[in-house]
Length: 338
Ligand code: EPU
Image 1 (cartoon, rainbow, N blue to C red):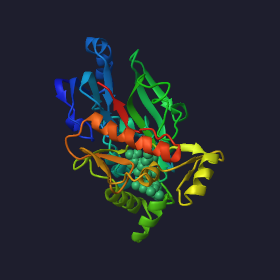
Image 2 (cartoon, rainbow, N blue to C red):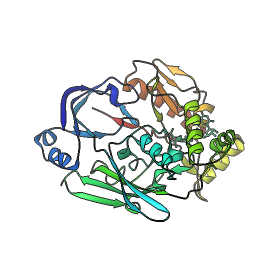
Image 3 (cartoon, rainbow, N blue to C red):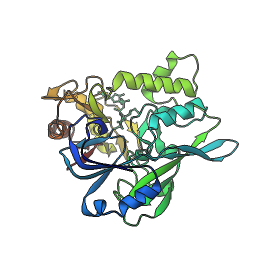
Image 4 (tube, rainbow, N blue to C red):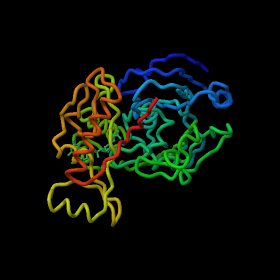
């Protein structure tokens, strides 16, 4: 376990916002986490647990303790003729795990290639891309309850996954720390390439297999999404709004090209990137913050922006979308006030 004081979080948030935390603590295993949860440091200070910092926006210095898991390792916990169950430490890098699955011909994670962040965050926001959500491969999530230090394993069903959502963002928000996630991967797997841009990209490859799907997803992401080390960003800043079918049909009369994703008979998901682009924001800047020129859902820190600069642009975008389409777009990024 390591405890650092007055610690800069610059390398722990992909937006590249320069804030500090009073304390930054990294633990290596469950026993250390349990000790930490019972310690005076956490009783006397507020605390917040981060993962890879790829979905966070710090508004100001954090006057408390930032916790970070260094629980590492992956082990095959079960194997059948068709599947392999792998239990992975929360502190492992997500894309390293996807790479491991692809190298070992284990299917299910490849569409989620190159998503920045760590394993522990994957169930919390149910990461998703190119027609797959991580809930499709999560078997269970091993957690520690913050108030008691007791271990609890959540089944897939108990996680109550939804679009970028889970019980860990709702009723159990800040109540549990994720320590391990068990994924169920397929030994014989049919790649899923039905998602619009992936179905086109995959045509550039001779074969459709786990390796080429990973390569195709990486190619699309590199083209559309800025590299955080070069241009600070947190991926999609907003969630794609889910609206009533009647509202969508009215909008379709006015905008026949409006794209959509099926949700149910009564609801439909509209890409926020399209809404934002229609409002004229794509590629536009206010001060040190800009809307990315290749994907309007991504806000970028052009250098030296602070959290309030980013929120200012986000609020302006939300106002435009509300005014033009009567739709509220909600940030996907976790906004942290110190
Ligand atoms: N679109 C535009 N202009 C834009 C961006 C998008 O018109 O600037 C329209 C296009 O019609 C496009 C459609 O929106 O066909 C969908 O775009 P894209 O495939 O890029 O996906 P998205 O809905 O904008 C979501 C996820 C991404 C994920 C992609 C691919 C959310 C909030 N975002 O974006 O996730 O990579 O699908 O599956 O659901 C992330 O969460 O950080 C993230 C990058």
